[in-house]
Length: 368
Image (cartoon, rainbow, N blue to C red; front, side, top):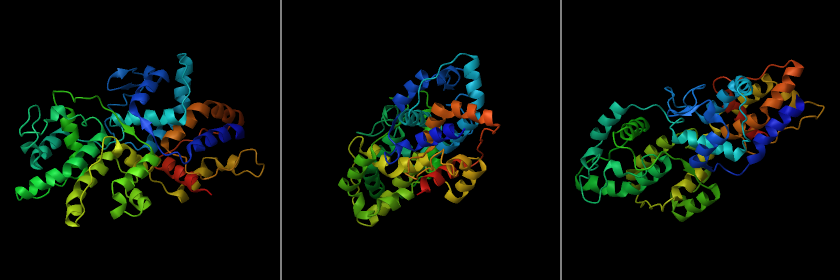
């Protein structure tokens, strides 16, 4: 068992320092090639042995919650796969990240929304006075049916930010208050718009760019002029969904204007890189308490191998590489052999409840 657990944990740490770069298009392909689609579906496309991952009623899962759910379900999943002769492909850390991106594109990690509330908010916040649903109401303003960013959370964040100066000018011209949005209101509006009779112009997608490129964008677009500490700004995004981030950025526009700052316009895909730098790792790692994670590490018997005096399993260094996706990758690649070894020694498979996975990841990333 010592060897199996060592392989599992070391693989999870292998992405240390690389940031979170992911593409839902690749994840969609992997959902098929890794045989996930034989048991699970996304929005009615796929198998029916497991739940439809695109239609789960109580959405709002965190990445670490999904990792814990998969971990807990793994022994039963492997049994079903053996019985049905399903051969699953390999899942690298990058493949797991792409799968998580695919789930994000299906709104798996977003908070639940309500189309009825969204319709009311779309009118109450004044959106409907300028933005027609199927036909344009004003010159140079596209109707919702032509919004290319509607199914792409990152592109939507970029579009809202780039549109905010024009919107501020319009509100001042009409002597109107800035239409501030709560994260729940924006979520509801998006659920309403995405479920209109006409389909969005593009299928749902989610891509996150390079953190190193994002740092360059952070400086080139003047973010550092007001936010000298990128790390402090990044902390404010911890655990927040992109809808929450987009709402906060939208509400930030009049504050910037009052302070005399002029918002810069992002070129296409620059927001992907910026969010890769400031947001993605924080979200997919999730919030957790390292001290509580230490207790999980001990109670789930991880310490009995990785901190044993015999040294047969290496001690885990905190290189910052653990997150929900890497834990799933490690589980997929090495969990079966780990389970086999544990059965031989009569050790129960570790299961995680509540925030235990988030706490464990926080502890592993805090170790020096």
